[in-house]
Length: 92
Image (cartoon, rainbow, N blue to C red; front, side, top):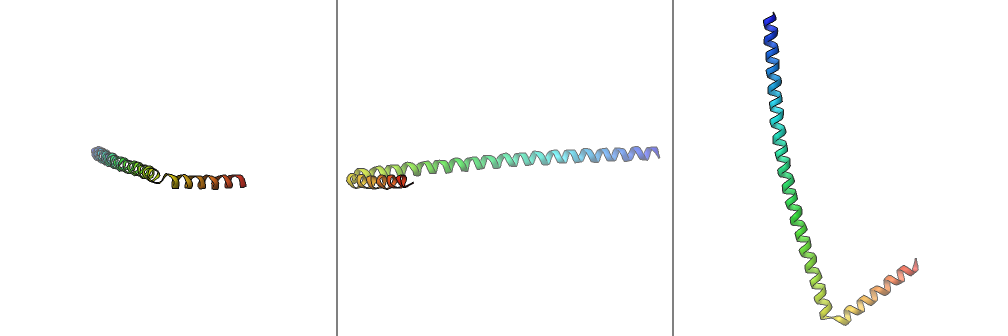
């Protein structure tokens, strides 16, 4: 009877060790997948930031060129917008 108890205890210990190893391997795999997903997300975010920056620079250059091509029209529009903003601020 005592030997059967030792045998069962040994089997239970082996099962517990196997379960710990399986959990450890699964955790390591999950960590690696999370790191890879994080790195991919970081790269996509950097690419989106770069594209937004390029579009902003292109927009600023286009606005600058428009102002240089039509200085009086641009001045009139700026004056009108300033007048409108001043009127709206004064109303409050």
